[in-house]
Amino acid sequence: MKHVIPVIDLSTRDRTDGRKSIAAAIDQACSDSGFFVIVGHGVPQELVDRTYATTAAMFASSDEEKETIANRPGFGGLFRTTNAARTRDRESPPDLAELFGVHVKGDLPDYERAKLGDEWLPARTANLWPKKPAEFRSTWNEYIGAMTGLSAELLHLMALGLGLHEDYFDDRFVDHMSSLSANYYYPQIEAPLPGQLRRGPHSDWSALTVLYQDNDIGGLEVLGKSDEWCDVPAIPGSFVVNIGDVMARWTGGRWVSAMHRVVNPERGHRSSRISIPFFYQSGPGAPFEPVPLLGDATAESEPAGITVGEWASKQSRAFIAT
Image (cartoon, rainbow, N blue to C red; front, side, top):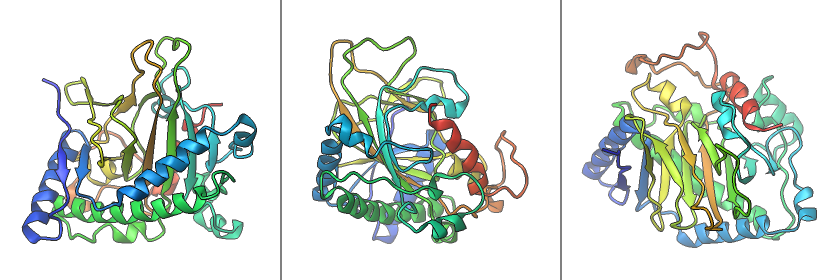
């Protein structure tokens, strides 16, 4: 039987009993598949709609305008080609998508970004912002603020679900290097290559991801423990939340950073869709080892004392197709 991704209502999180119930539901979801859907989150729908509208307008701009924000080696900017499966050392055709992304550190002066360490990190590169629509940058920064606040609240609920003090992870995110991306899954006029998907199988290397999907077309699938792909429901007004490799590592394998993908529409269905994931990532100096109180059941071994920044540097290089 296929796993069902749970829907968790956050509207009772200000009550003690509600908070404990939500934390327990998150613990169960993260142990089962690492994915859940949230409603009652409090993010204004007007802001979500405005972010989507400006993002759609940016992707609809001319090739000449897109060239002004085309990524140079780094992160901030527009990628016309990516290959998510490469982060798992899988050989596959490029993804059928465009991606635009910025980093919360990307607008800092060069000397401030240089303080993030010697590793090659997206956080150390400057953002490239589109000039059109005129309100794009301010809207995205407003949305980043909302997602940062929501992610910090989710992190408190996650700590509670793990039996830790709610603010246990706070120090790790004081200098967080989070990012906001938008995926444009354009209409498929030509038939995909064998094995080619809108986004190939991968796991996120963030601590957690908060994703907005623009419509009910769907396509996001998660690999369950029974090795079956299951759909993630696209519920109006909701966000999809999943933990990434960093949080899975911190929990010593108690929680799952699941493989997921975006499948193609049925042949002949020339739909397009946009998804906007916010990747909440700790500061580069945060430890990558499991929390001592949670043990370590992970099969993956990493050098002792490695930081999140050192680990993320290796992961980020693999994502950009050359």
